[in-house]
Image 1 (cartoon, rainbow, N blue to C red):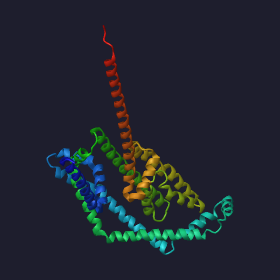
Image 2 (image 1 turned 180 degrees about the vertical axis):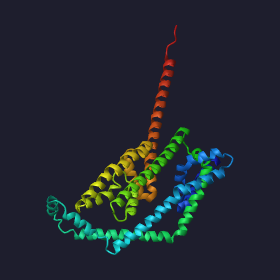
Image 3 (image 1 turned 90 degrees about the horizontal axis):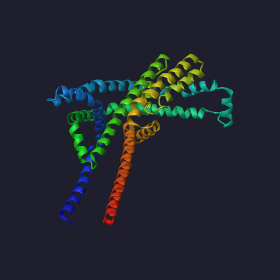
Image 4 (image 1 turned 120 degrees about the vertical axis):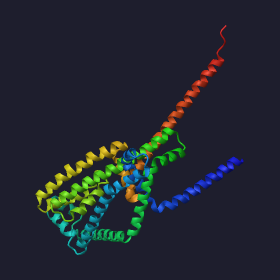
Length: 374
């Protein structure tokens, strides 16, 4: 082996080990750095506008953008979180004290069901629902207890939370200031043509913007509308259920209906016909409309992903990566499709080049074998 090849092999091995070590070092702060990248991409147009007004002061432009992000995004999020924690504690106390009993609500619905439903349940020998009700009640108690404990743990781990928040803010400042140069360096190290590099990075930023902005806007719209209608209909814990609807709206088509539909069924079954009809109409034509209209416009068209791919990748991302997955899932799906498209285009281009080369060789052979003109 030549000295040059030995040096290259050693350098590649060293590079792999150093990269693995660096990833292991920053892994505890993955969430902070990940969301720093996400929010930087979202607020980059605002930062660019501010930077154009003060091109000689990049530090000040990055700081102003960061302060605006704190007031526009961070503080509202903290206020919503505080309200959610209060609602979770209240709901847990209701379940613990027996004031929220699923058997009461389910029995009220079952008693109002038509005879054919009771006959169907009897055919399948489902006559005693007390066991199912007790299991559902126990599950609700466990879920509410876990949520309440998590809320308490969140307060106890305030030091870790503020440390992670500090890392995110610190990273965002430098991403705003040096992000363009960093992206160019990363592009330079990718062993692809400039066309492919630009395509990958364009899809990366497009999917992040569309997924985060689209899902957040849909979640805010559905959560707000759901909370308002539930409060108007005097449903207890309307703020909590509105926030839950906002989180469930990450699941396209079915998310928010998991909350308002059972409530509407309960209203209709217990004789509150007016409330049931109002909630059903509002859920279908107002809350559902935000999902059917806003999501395709904000997410589907920009990412160029079918609705079923968005749904499956979102569910898979949430199950694998947690809350980060609602961005990572569609992002991986989009990059997966783009990479295979680029690969297919490369194969087609190579085949075309080989075909042209074969034709050229054939023409050369024909010319060389052509008899001279006398």
